[in-house]
Image (cartoon, rainbow, N blue to C red; front, side, top):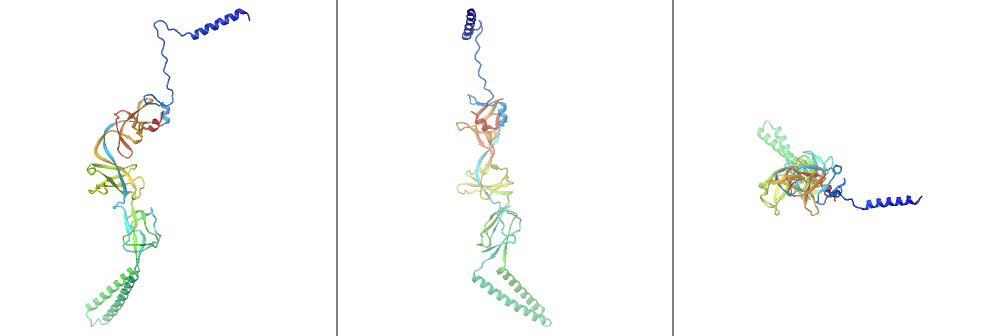
Length: 368
C-alpha cells in the first residue's frame, strides 16, 4: 500500500477516537437527561422501606390470598386450661359390690376401646368367703334343710287328716313349708352363685381394670364407660366474675359444641371450676386429657377478625400483618392481637378496606 493511504486511515481513527472521548454537549436551552433508575426486575425482593415487591407470577406460586379487613366489635375471649371428665349423663362405672374373684364372661373379658351395649355382661364376680363364714353358711343350710323336711312331713300328715283338722292349720303348714323352701334356695344361691357385672349404659370402654381370676375389694372400680359423642370439660378460672361474664366457649382446634353448665362457688387449688359439655367433638379425647378452651365473654373488643395464619413476627419480634397496598407490593403493619377462638385472632391497628394477606404470610415474611 502507498503512504497516502496510511495517512488517511490514521486521521480517520484519530477523529473517531476524539468523538468517543469528548462529552456530548446539549443544545442551547436543553439540559442533559438524568440517568434512569434501574428496574427492579421480576424477582421477589425486600425494598429499602421494608415493603416487599412480589410480582404476580410469584404471588401465584406462593398461593398468596388476601381478605378485605372489616373493623367491628368482637367478643373478648380468654384462654382457659381444662381437662376431660366423664359425663355422668351419658357415661357410667362398674364397681364391685363386695369382695370377690373376677371370672370372664362367655365371650371373654372386654378390652379398652371396645363398644358395648347397655345391659351386656362384662364379667362375673364370684364372692370370696373365709373358712369361718363358709362354715356358718353351711350350718345355716343344714338347719334350714332339716326344718324344711319337718315342715313337709307335717304338711303331709295334716293333709291326710283333712277331714278332722281345720283348714286354716293345713294352710299355715303349707305356707311355712313354702317359706322354708324359698329361704333355702336363696341361701344356696348366695353361697354358690356369682354376680353378673353388666354395663349400665352403652358406650366405649375407657377403663378395664380387671383380669381373669383377679381378687377385688368392695367399691373397687372395675370398668368405666364413656360416650365419645358427649364428654364433660372442666376448666379452671382464676377470676370469679368470669362466671357472670361468660357467653360461650370453644375447644382450641376442635369444632365441638360446648354447652356451659355452670361454675362452682368454692375455689379449688386457687381456681374456680367451670363445667362444659362437649357434644360431637371432631377429635378423640381420653379421660383426664388436658385441653385448652377459648372462653367468650360479654365484653366487646373492637378490631379486625383474622385467621391466626395472617399474623407473623418481624425481626423485632413484633406481631405484624402484611397489607396488599399495590398490585405487586406488600407492606408490613404492626398490630396488637387477642385470641378470638382457636383459629381466629382480633387485630387492632388496621382499618376497614385494607387487603390483608391471610395465606402465605409466613413465606412473604421470609423474603429478603
